[in-house]
Image (tube, rainbow, N blue to C red; front, side):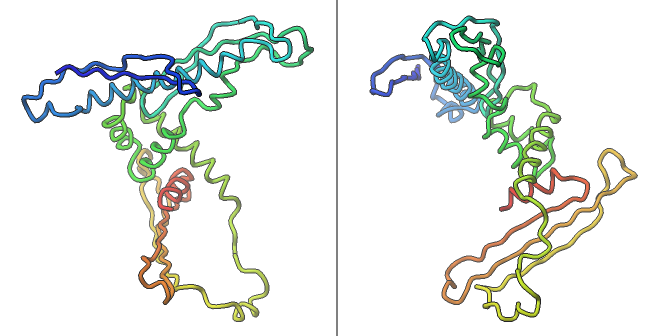
Length: 264
């Protein structure tokens, strides 16, 4: 059996613009392992489909940027360049021209790359999320193996890249958390007894220890683990209690931030 999958691009007016052959599969359904999509076929399909879904919007975005917004004149291409964009379904090289500004208006900026306004990062947010999520649970190496097993990621992706991406996410989350709060209650301690009773009991368990550094065996770092559980009030007995877990490392901000975010 021969299966051909096609991608149909439609305009905003629901008019079919382009029809592209995405993948053609020759399926032999004589054995159980031949049924449906194999993992290799699924990776190929996702990678090819991602390429077309990326290229079309980028071409649409760059089309109006090739002319001056003030006078409509065609802008001069100063350099033909490209940039890479890493996604969950592969790394793709995209055309990124460098354009000269029109002389009709005095400008202080140098030649610009319009694609930089769309691709503010070189890594897709979904890929950063998956790398940070897995790295907060297992080692960087195991995270890399898990992602490459099921996603069409390039074999050039290494542990250093996953560690760098995870650290970047951790720093952003750490900045969003703000400074540490020594106390969340306002007023004098003598007035705290007048506050209403909390809605449900709050239980906190915490423990810690020292873990040996993987690379410098003679050095240790402190790790604190904990779990808090908020039980429900009497009128919400059918509701399951909510819990939060955390792992904090004094010398590893990356572990602290990513784990705190993952378990929320």
